[in-house]
Amino acid sequence: MIIAMKQHCSEEEIRGFAASLEQRGVTVHVSRGVNQTVLGLVGDSSGFESESLEAHHLVEKVVRVQEPFKRANRLFHPEDTRIVIAGPDGISRSIGEGTLTVIAGPCSVESREQITAIARDVKAAGAGFLRGGVFKPRTSPYAFQGMGCEGLDLLLAAKNETGLPVVSELMEIHQLEVFDEVDVIQIGARNMQNFNLLRELGRCGKPILLKRGLASTVTELLMAAEYIMAGGNERVILCERGIRTFETFSRNTMDIAAVPYLKQKSHLPVIVDPSHATGRACLVPAASKAAVAAGADGLIIEVHNDPENALSDGEQSLTPEIFASLMGEIRNYAGLEHKTL
Image 1 (spheres, rainbow, N blue to C red):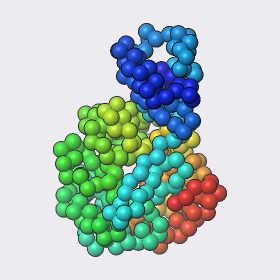
Image 2 (image 1 turned 30 degrees about the horizontal axis):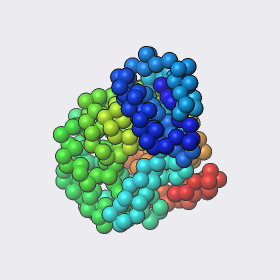
Image 3 (image 1 turned 90 degrees about the horizontal axis):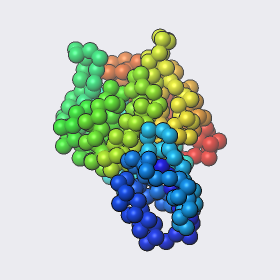
Image 4 (image 1 turned 90 degrees about the vertical axis):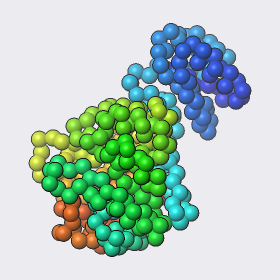
């Protein structure tokens, strides 16, 4: 249930009204916008009658939320969420609410020279974040699984040299203890419904980049975000990375319609991963521009300085030169959409 308060309400009146609701067995989440404050009731609200609540002198209107996700719901939080992250260079970077953020880097950290060179290149091209995998979930047990903590040290060294905040994938709860200096924790498609992990992330306070599962619906993605937000962490970024269908020409099928739908239903930032969605480097530029045109808040793109010899996902990785060219094209699209990189 959502309760929109009248504009003249004072903070003291809102706190008092929220406290009276919580005495009736629900949790009240307060969302303060520029023009209006909204109260979201989480829990069993069946005992509340909309008519009696609307009769209260502080209440503008009452809306019952039919969707199972509450905190991620736009009704719960009418204004777009913006997540601000400060890099070691002292520059704050935003994801969501009118910005277009590009996250770029290799699928896997392979060496100091590799990750540092790519970090310099993607920063020069205009990327705002550096991505790099150090713990890698792979379909084959014989495939490269990442460098682990050694790779994390190399990723953080590239972060400190370039000033770019870093994004890296976490696979298990115990890895949280070594992710203190990772700026954005990525949860991959295979872990989207690892609910014990999601609950723990709800208590960690770091921004979470949550990728849609291989065969998950949009509602299931939003419910996974709800697990994190229910624990108190509202810094969640949704990521469309393609879903598995009967089509075989691409690695996955990029669900471009999911972007405007998620933006309609949720206040959380939505980014697109055209690298995993297509699986082919030659398709990434077009898919990136389609994502921007659809209203995405950002892109996460794989970039490698030697794709042919990459230890993972080389076939979908752009070279730094092609990435720089794409960034120029994206700027034109971003200008048309009144967004900034």
